[in-house]
Length: 512
Ligand code: 4AD
Ligand code: MG
Image (cartoon, rainbow, N blue to C red):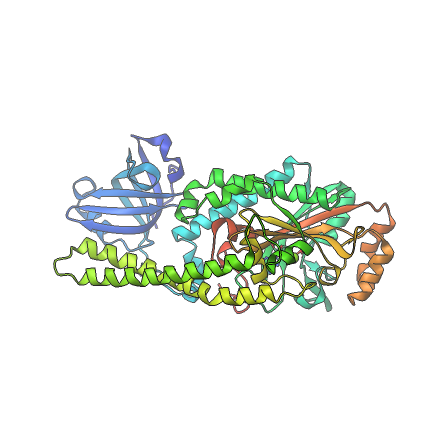
């Protein structure tokens, strides 16, 4: 292995070095060559850069090596930084010398389409792809923005334990482990501890891994995910909804400001995110159900009619794509068609086929969504499709509050003005993403809590410490939990939450 050097820069710093010679180190993301010239795309984790190696510049030996470089080989380049607007990042490197750390073995992730299972099996390598790189950079921005927001607003970060002796969100979804011969559970939520910490600090937030054991295989479910849970003394539900709205707006705005390039890589329509500057509608469960069932319109939009219209448009688009594919396939076979044109058409056909697959899924789903929306039973929790139907009517995230007591956790405060309903709130993201935040005001009456613990068949002794919070200086308080991967999923418009975390843990996925 060639020795290390301190004297190198990263691609993200290039703009300071225009016209200068620099050393860069990274991996070969792509390579093509023609007579006397090799083009490399170098990636170093901070960005991507086209590097041009001329035989006459780097010499015959290095040139032969450059031509043989396999994908993901690790290299060091010295060269001249030139401005080139046409290139990604706006620069190009004119290579003067090339050194090789390691010539990589044949890289398993190629240009051809891979199935998701294959990619997930190779997650440790898949993370290097440009798309995954972009998602993880956005994840980083989101994490930093979350800390920024709370730190600027007087919250103290405190960590809740991961081994816990009690359930927070209900016993059916706990991972049990052996804690020195005592059963312990991996935390579902830091909230109960957050409440204790808020009584010590006034305003706190936790930021940690949480675990859910349900055997769910939906695109929103992870067995291990990261949750941010602020808890605030002297706050009621309305004040909490104000915080949530400001918080989400802040985080999304940070991504829009800092990750223009990454959002471009993901081909994300940013206008769909820019709407966060608008007010988030606050809708009671009662009204939300009427909207789902199509009994109440929103700005002239009716859920059932909108879905029926979506279905027609989906079907029309499928037909149009079918026609376009046919035309392009015919064009490819036309004698005399140039190689470049053929490749272009083939790529288009590939893209269209991907689009059709999604559309066909929608074509199958929409009638089911319509049926389950029309048959929704008042009092039930929203399913994924109900959330999709409801959020379809809005451009911004919405906040649904005052939920039926029976379907929410034991600690939720009953609404004074709506008996049987609790002061909980779910924030639902648009574009079909659904719940990203759950929270609300906490019950302060110790007797109501004791009854609720009995009613939910939770072990009283494990909650004694929690009840102490109501014995010693109890105050109105509220909080919420944001699912980190859920918000990333929406911001990046990912098809599945598994791409929002470096190494997802889900049923059937423990490696890598
Ligand atoms: O709605 P949940 O279950 O609420 C709580 O745990 C409360 N104790 C939070 C609080 O008030 N402090 O979970 C909160 C959020 C959800 O809105 C969702 O974004 C995310 O956590 N979440 C999941 N994300 C990925 N995979 C899962 N299995 C998730 N379950 C919940
Ligand atoms: Mg929830």
